[in-house]
Image (cartoon, rainbow, N blue to C red):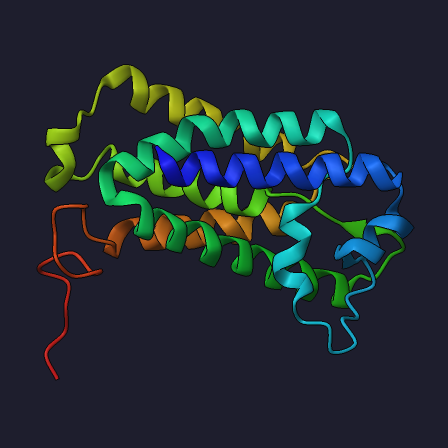
Length: 201
């Protein structure tokens, strides 16, 4: 699936850049590369609600995100195509970024927020919707896959409560993915929104 592969390659290249400049594990250095400040102050640097998702704290962080992305990204992209896959991923990243900023504005702290988890959670949410949607049955709705996705969601949400993990970012991305999974059409539909959900003016 080209979209999933491209995202993984981009994340890997950026992580190698982090290693090259010695930013891995250093919140101050990561802020210089585009992380979200944990005090919620963007100071006009709104691009950070996107660039934070390209960065990762350490090798465990990126491996976990890439592993889940490789699985759920394939499920989503196979059903809705590369363009709509990218749309869900980007909107989920933005939703997660905004959720993080709001949470940090209300409860500021020191440090930085990084990671593709918001986008990956969005894809996870969308994939769960897709494997239950009747109009996508032709793409396969194996019971094992459904169970696996739900178990994965439960584990991922539990991890979200651990110290140092952005619960707000995870939930923000997940909510965006669940919502988009309901309305985005399959890859065979001409319009972005699935048939039967459009509203007449």
